[in-house]
Length: 299
Image (cartoon, rainbow, N blue to C red; front, side, top):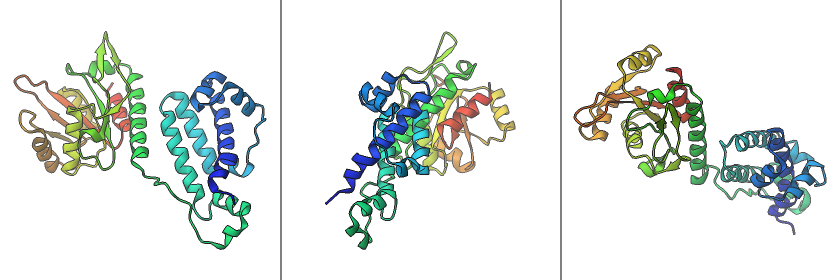
């Protein structure tokens, strides 16, 4: 009797670790850094590098395995992907390959021929799990922040209250379902500074605007706020963005809702301020990278 999980441990894991170790080394990581990322010893990394660990050619040659290893290697090396997200993505791939008729299922049937007589599936994990969705959102926000940090002149667009770049999970209901930068992005001596890694539930204001827009029909899943400037609005309009004004002195949900209902395809929301309220522009988009690219195009 042999469980499919034994194949994962004996065949899949050594093969993927070997491929991932090689990919991380190609990305410029040291042997120690690779060991830290993979949670293994340096001696194990050395064995992978010298081909001293037996791998499975069929797993190593699978296009899905190689594509995911390449994506994870680039993301882990750049800091855009966390080890937790890498684990989740690999876990999902394992469950896909375990599904009846797929690669791990085939290997399992070969190891246990009696299984071939059964039309069964070994899928036990949900590929669209909450954890996977959350990690994807956090990874996307990190990539968007990287774009903004590297955008020369972005600090000049940060309002006095600070900026934030946020994104939500598909079924977001409240601010706890929206990831953003704790403490907001601030201008420190002319340089945009991101004080901490993105987290869920840390953005109150920009998250509220995004959620309000979504509740009233917007398809946006990400947003960022920048300073209000009529010239910036004119440039955004010239670039094909649809603008909608709202009144922040009242209830934000209602005000944003009215603006979105008047202009359902709006990708830029703005308010011109009032007593004690700084005028702000909000840029909406399908993901944090798209929002960051829009902001970068204004510089």
